[in-house]
Length: 324
Image 1 (cartoon, one colour):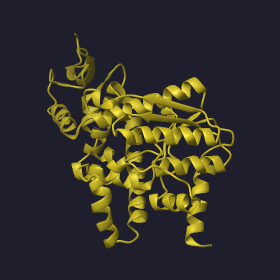
Image 2: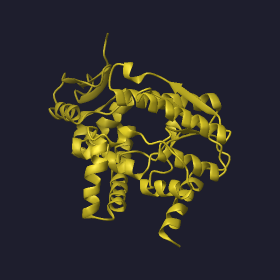
Image 3: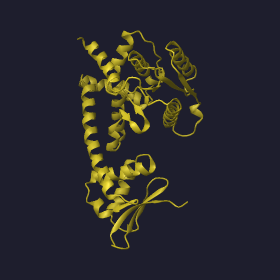
């Protein structure tokens, strides 16, 4: 078997091993190589996904040409197409984050309306590696190194190509003469991810020609260790966190990394987001002072407080809603 044939077999397995026949799917599609490759893989495997595309009107005529290209794909393969048109530049706040939130909200709306079972996106191994390196460069917390998850059952999300290098997807498209759209902004080096993609990763590949496989294995090992640690911390919370409080003495017996995990899990539960590294350190330092009546903000709507239990005089950590 040739290396290319072996790679293409891995593409087929990425679909056949992760999707049950007949599954109703929403496919987030941009018109770029990754999502177009995933579309053709799904079609070959016998699926008829509902295509969902967001036109952000960020790139002028190119945005409209992406839109038209996807409409032609939908017509050619007789697929249902859902389009959302917005002018993202006019929305205040972080542009990238706004686009991401709007995109996934739109995908979920399409899923609910259609009764689809899954939302698929075409994130691949290079995306995973870029995310890992980006988080490493900016000093993310350990949980930030988990990168992109292959699946998120609560959000009905699946990323079946996450272990596949982009080079394999490009070779697949070329071998089958499948057309796709190229986003010119992906080559603009003022964006950090593009700098990582076009300048940093090629140097790492020079150092280690098997860099993609090596870093993928390292990320998988790190994920396993972090997930085991988080699972242990989640169990601790199940055993100790009751009526929005736990005993401080029990918390202080935990190792530092477990204390951080517990606080991150609690913060995510109450705020649906993650603590920054600095805020996490500040909260942890406050609790380690072990003094009653200390408190720190725990998101926009909550305080994390140290209170003395009136019955036992022992100190408890309490999550309290702010009074507005």
